[in-house]
Image (cartoon, rainbow, N blue to C red; front, side, top):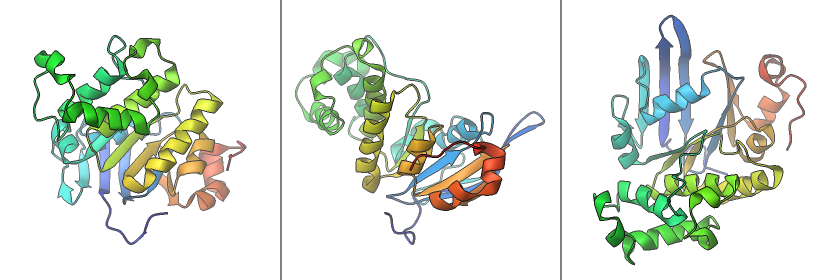
Length: 259
């Protein structure tokens, strides 16, 4: 459990995003400190992925501010935010199927602070033993992917491909992780493995988790924000959110929430 008095690594204030006359993100405030997993849940169309894209810099906010590691990054492009310490995974796999596991993660390492601007044209020298490969192998071992190191990503299971994507996010050495539905497409066994992995990673990062799997959310989250029509309906502990009548009416209904 994180220290609630710790300074937030990610701070959002009054974030707004409009698409024409449609208000998709409506005055969203959020703080996440290291060691916290802040889950954002809500019905389809609530604005969850739009919010992640605003934080990542893929969408420009119309109002509000985003602070990352104490820096106001509201106007910064994606790459500059990533270099400061923002990593993300995507709702849909972004791995390159024809690349091996090690090549996919190496590509991400090269874009991070240890990459040194290595030119992708010199791929063969990049895969030779050295600091970059050592970094990749450390990540693969941490995620249980060492045995799949040299196999093409396309032949691996969907769950293993999701782990490669997480490895790619970690390879950029982030301080804050944006996780967009990491359980999407996973079976029950793979979901439990992902939950346990994220629990092991939790002390080292501040995480924003967007997820539809309520068992995963309430297994992992230290705090939960419920987004409805772009506005935060409630932001509280998982226990309070689980018992909230307004949350059940707006989103959860009679769904049984796993512990």
